[in-house]
Length: 372
Image 1: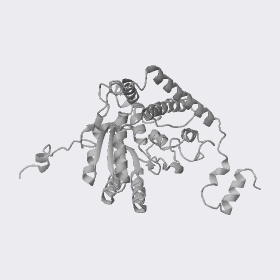
Image 2: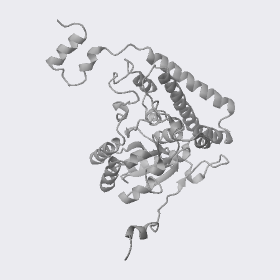
Image 3: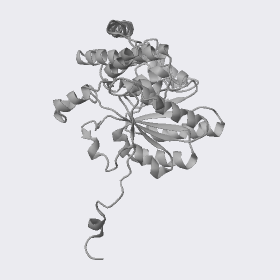
Image 4: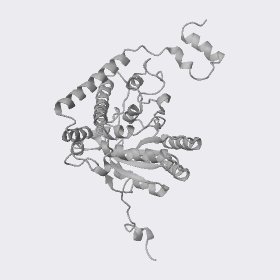
């Protein structure tokens, strides 16, 4: 065969594409095959949770811009993915979150006061200022600490899931990450291990189209993130990440399968980050106003509200009241947490050993002003 074999093969490979699952139709009705069958009470709770998450984002960004906190990673535009996935979790399940998974953690039972307190790093912070802002955790509800390095939580989650399997527990692990995380070694190592050992884990990828400033088109030549699961021997599912009910339906099925011993699933929620990557980012440098405006028309909160209104569960006045209550709650919690005193200096030598050794005990006295 003459010429470059690569040139002859280029463009001849079959491209495997997965369908995008959508529950909420353009006329605001729902596809019965993807209807999770939630009660009216649950639907209103989910709508309120989305409004609370957006109110938290708006307030936290304002706090950072005014110099009252140091850093924040918003999830504006991704509320449906976060709240829908989080609502599928049960007591006993584990979360290995990315830094944009506030909503999922709140739905798992992580207290709002703890999340806000961690942003301030004072005595209202359970970690006592030892983590950078937006790096929260809570062992009591099995929310493992956020990690700054991209995708390092994936192999950690798979290891925890394998431990769950070895212990015979009826629990599952969900691990959140972005589309950029799928380009890391950690992603491939975790996927391979999970497939080989049948770990009860759900890989939840919020594909928000950008890894900071790198567009998804430059992340992979694959047709999607979800299709990558095929190579590792387990299912991949693409779902409309701005469709709360579709996300909840898909993630709930994946978690139930994992708990029942059915192994891992990769869920790709196709969504869009409406705000900056973080408060240190300027998204106007790498994307257009027209692109943002086109996605704003698919705002997940407005979309869900229209569905509830079409069903007679919500009206404009009630929607406004819920949004106002969410803002009031966030303002109240911020005021309480911001008013807490600073962390005492002597705490820096605590929580290191089960029993404090003599040299740290001496240092604690000095820090507290009680030493010689």
